Image 1 (cartoon, rainbow, N blue to C red):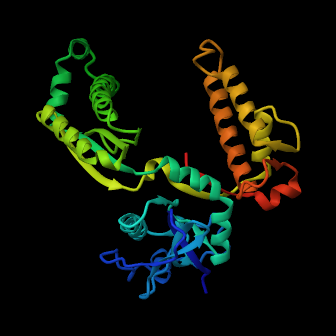
Image 2: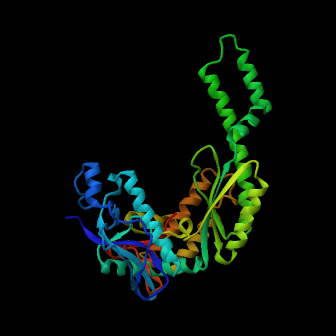
Image 3: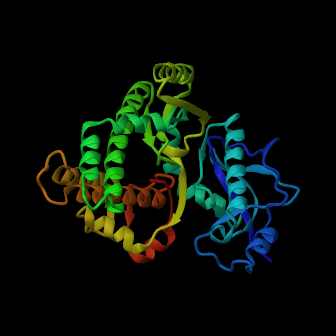
Length: 380
């Protein structure tokens, strides 16, 4: 018998418990533990440490909220499934349902998505997650207020014609000419040299267009985040965080870009979406060694440290290792990245230690750490 509990889709800014009417959600039939294991030929996972789970596949699938003060987790009853052993087609269906539930709830509430695969064993653990993460979650709601995500993708209209243009570049023509003159003939390595040079030109063209698009749309956005490109045909794959009142203006700007680059690029716009790329929450168990490393990285040595001490230490170390102020220092960017990560770890730990804000500091002894090791944070 597999472990049963609660699958968490996200957190809404409401303390009212409710059930959600979710029509047109990917049907749960055929997405079940039995089918998954039958396909992979494996036994049910036992004590899965990573806690990768998926929504229960019962016909009575329901989505509802569990409240703590003025926030609520959106959940459904769930059974444990090991995603790492799940066939891709079934995994995609689980991910699709995760996203569909969030987007349906979004019609009624502001929702901060939870990392795909987040599971809690009981209502009590849900309450603990909300309590530990209360201050972080409220901070995210404030930052995400009235914000939506719109994803914009741009692809080459005709990649072959772009490659033909590149083949006429002087350095490409010169390289080809020099290789053709070789008495021993053109080798595979020679062809690879031409390919590398063509790709460099293609990447430069792609970066030029992407910068123009991001600069234009960025004027209407609070932030944007570039995602990986799926293939050579893709020029841009970027998520934009915008105020929902500017959605129409943003979409009109995309239409303008589409007309401007109509002979070169094709645009696709997806949204509005919850701010997946900017504010997705994550529940994790932090190791004592990680928090201790963060404390030492910021030069904090006491066993009880206040929030002001953490912030002051962050400012002090940031000045000492900021790349703009120390451009010649070796490894300065890694030092700055480590400092930023250390600050985030300590801030999350402080908030987990003070869910109600009744105290102004946190303890760093191993005994104190055990009860505050569950953190709710935003994914990087």
